[in-house]
Image (cartoon, rainbow, N blue to C red; front, side, top):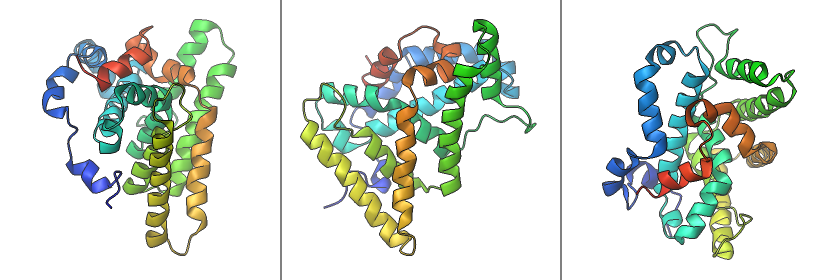
Length: 249
């Protein structure tokens, strides 16, 4: 039986709501904020010299991430309540895997400068932070990205890793935790089969990939929201934005 996480199906397929969703998605809060920012922040976007530009790039990755999730038949077959809870629980690791896959390091033309460093500096100035809390949040995210890039993860491997973190039976309040556990195990087995065929001489690669996912547990949703999205969404609740993207009205 074909895996519900088949990358070719994901790349070719469209989610069941997509025929009606592209117009609806364009009316969501995040889309409106991005479009509004494009009109008033074009100079920063071209040169990537502001935290807003970094947030815009991060927001585009988040939009792609949600569209990826909505193309998974096994995800769409779940009760809407479970879909919402899985996305709200797993958006941070999914987003960071998306950043890694897109190879977005937010470095400028000069390797000595970084957009994330600009965000960090601005946060320190605004809140009088000596560098501790925000540098720690930035360091954890950067460490995860560097681990992914050092492993040179393929497109298919990213698909299976996203399936593993998305289908988390530990998410609170699920209606179908046992079925979601099955989907997670299916993603792991499919990844293992892929690894056995592609890297038969490197049995440790699977362990390395799964160990990389463990690092995501120490990265908080609040920290990622503050680092990447506050310049665009302000105090808007991220959970509300995610539900709008998942179920456009």
